[in-house]
Amino acid sequence: MLSKIVRTVANQLIVFILVFGLYIIAHGHLTPGGGFQGGAIIVSGVVMLLVAFSSHEMKKGLRERVLSIVESSGALIFIILAFAGIGTVFFYNILLGTPLFGGIPATGSGPGILWTAGVIPLMNFAVGLKVIAGLSAVVLALALFSSGEEVEE
Image 1 (cartoon, rainbow, N blue to C red):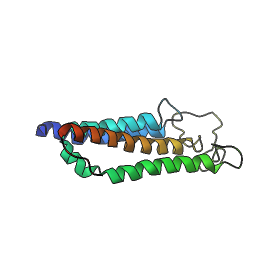
Image 2 (image 1 turned 180 degrees about the horizontal axis):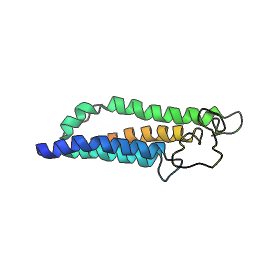
Image 3 (image 1 turned 180 degrees about the vertical axis):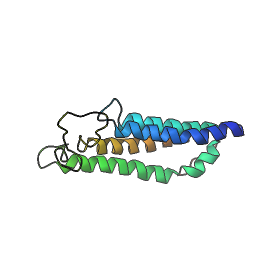
């Protein structure tokens, strides 16, 4: 475990890393980014906490069962969205053109107009969940194995 200063700074920075990762996920259909990139940013925050605190401390907060449920939920959301438009074509954008998520602005899409892509932001969110849970599990497992602790089955 590192000094109290490093732990305090890590506790403060994690909020900004989480918000930035969620921003990248939410704006993935308008700017470079998306579910994978935002998920990787959020996992970099998990790695920062893992370095600042011990793997034993992180093991208390990140359970394998919870990570598995989150990863499976991301895959399930993605599959449901992919099959939702199967009456037309696989991955059909069923929300495009609807007032809920697919309103098309007269001046064209821009960074401030989030609700123009239909199901694409929802798919980015699903991919983000899968990446966050999967990479967090990998990083935690590597940290636990390198410290000599056993991982729960």
